[in-house]
Length: 101
Image (cartoon, rainbow, N blue to C red):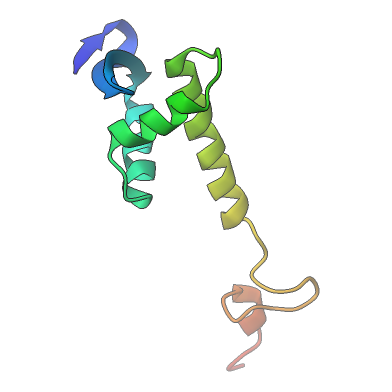
């Protein structure tokens, strides 16, 4: 890895039988590693999958968009209701309001 200006790290990877480099900011590399680990893949394998589906988009940009979409999907899941509308979940602090009074 080499650090470029502005906190961007440039890594060389072997993708589809050829070497290429990807330049990303550190938070994107960190998120990419977490996503790859969660899928049981190496970063190189995950970038290979992103590369295969990116079309004409720049690889570094495709990786950033992939990470953004993964984070957005996780945020949507995290914001999913814990119970049906109008019901209180046991995990909802308001469901225990008045207990022990």
